[in-house]
Length: 173
Image (tube, rainbow, N blue to C red):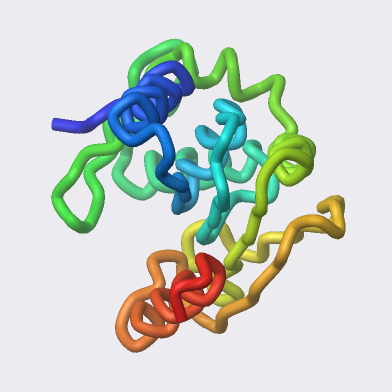
């Protein structure tokens, strides 16, 4: 079973958290496609956002999904829900609505808009086996870009390094 996170549900979670903790600083840490969801939601009153391994553009996602479907002998179509089993046993569920919204998005433009209202750090995986070479060439100077020589999921010793970098960005270290 997969969990579908949408712009609306993301904003609802943030609003609920804010209502229960009105004076708390809220930081968001997002990974991969979750970065696009957060940028699309563009939540207000967030102290810091940290994106790990975000796509440079949303078209990268379609290319990767086509590759995965081909690898498993599946037919890919934007008109049907696609279900992909991940290595960790979870399922990625991609409904047709995703493609209709996604085809009109510019991820780097959304990241720049987000950086206008909150601190934004992007931690790039320079050996990203999922997205490949991610080129973020149109980002605002307000975005703090940090590069790590690791794969998409920051596995092994890279995980501890990632946690350290996140702690520094949040002012906890």
